[in-house]
Amino acid sequence: MIVDPSWLPPLGIAIPLAGACVLLALAKFVPRLVVDTVAMVTAVAGVVAMAFLVVATDSGRVVTWVGGWTPKEGTSVGIVLAADQIGAGFALLACGLTACALIYTWRYFDDAEAHVHVLILLFMAGMVGFSLTADLFDLFVFLELMSATAYALTGHKIEEPRSVQGGFTFGVVTSLGAYFSLAGIGILYARTGQLGMPQIGAALDRHGMDVLVLAALVLVLTGLLVKAAVVPFHFWLADAHAVAPTPVCVLFSGVMAPLGLYGVLRVSTTVFGGVLSVASLHGTLVVLGVVTAVLGALLCLMQRHLKRMLAYSTIAHLGLFLVGLATLTASGVAGAVVYVFGHAGVKGALFLMVGVLLARKRSVDEFDLYCEGRDERLTKWLLPLGALALAGLPPFGTGLGKALSEESTGSVALTALFVLVSAATGGAVLRASLRIHFGLGPPPQDTDVDTTKGDDEEQEGRFPDRIPATMIGAIAVLMTGGLLVGAVPAVAETMGAGAQRFLDRAGMLAQTLHGASATAVGGVEAEWTWAGVLLGLLSAALAMGIGFVGVHFGLGRLRAALKAPLHVVHRLHSGHVGDYAAWLVLGMAAVGALFVIT
Image (cartoon, rainbow, N blue to C red; front, side, top):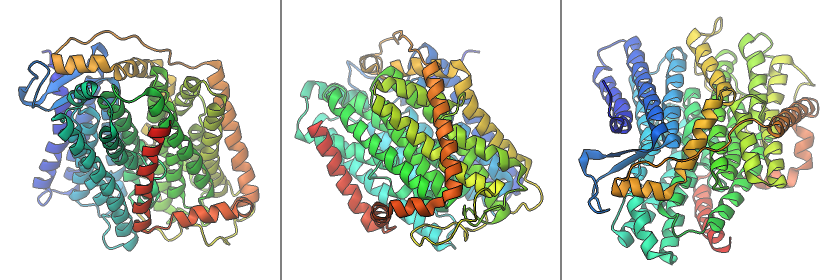
């Protein structure tokens, strides 16, 4: 039996929604084992469906008009889903990470009720829909579905004030961004009478750029940049990671924030690609990416709270992804996507290992855990390996993505940025591991009042004697996945062809609006080069240097040298939601200014 591939995109959205409904209906009548099993089967079914979709997109973009409302003479009132290799790959990544998070959750939470599983499945539906839709209003709907479930998962421990505050700040900041996006969509609808991305793009091609269209561009992108935690829209991310359950952090860092960047590129190229100059988009994204990468790396080095350290590492890497995407070339987009996939596996494994430490040592504080991890056989060796992989160690996917991105920029300065930022984030994690697991360096001195500590975190699991096999399995799957992304050539080759099709705006409009057949696209060379391998080894060596220097000299001397600028940065990260809202508005104005002057 041959399955019509046009069924697969809506199936990817329907499977988690159906699973969530079944769980809600059964939750009061069945034991926890059944709840875990139903949630796990649902996530695996999503993985299978999206894997078939990735295979189907090899021969061209898969377009689905929901309800059969196909366009007539280029005009339609229907809703369109359009999956290429990149979109389908993100949907597969979302399903895969959800399955890993659910495996880990199986024995991690003692008191998790079915509503946690329901929220995770709804979150998965939002991510899959966001990856596959070609309708701008639906993009907003799926963005809100992701956001609403993410708020609830972040603050689900309602008896803990910090959890509620983290969820509240997350909710307010990202909701403000979403409302700006909705305002931009409204302007575009008023101007074009369309909501589909291809339809709006075709209408703007006839109309051209003006002040109102530029305002709509900035408004729509603001919500997506907030979701992507790009500076200065990043304030919510570290606070949310610090209080969210560890398995949920895997989804936040691994796929939710990168999806914001995916949305930025999708909207910029498909909707505004005919009226927005390449130079303007390139310049704006490069500036935002560089600032995000540098600030994220600096703040990552300053952290002792392990979950915040990984969160700021994510911000730094999001900046690097954005610099790769800013090239607007197939090689740059392919490199950034490979980087995202490799990072998702490695960072997910690192978060889950921090969850193991929290469950067994009741702390995520680097200083408090000094020498406490000597007996941890799992994290003692995997955490340092994950730190070096984060720095770009070949043949991990992070290393290949970093190498492809560096080569696509064609800039020595940007290549140096990739090397230094990735080394700094890997070095920070390695420093923490050397102290915790090997007791290297003198005992850290607790003298800095500006640093957030992690010694009073609520214990999420209790496994004093033996780590459950489900938790070990989830960590192994993620770490292996991060390795295979770089070691299996077919992954990068698929993303190379996918990037060509992603940037083929004319083909997208012709296929969705006029029912044209998918045209063949060429691939790009997405493989290891000697220069990429050497730069990856250089980043890993620098990370080792940063780690070993850090354990002997600690944060004190570095903080003393950077006291004045760090105090300013700390004051900016005040934790007050009003301050974050003000930065959001200022950032939106800055993005508008960048589009004008670049």
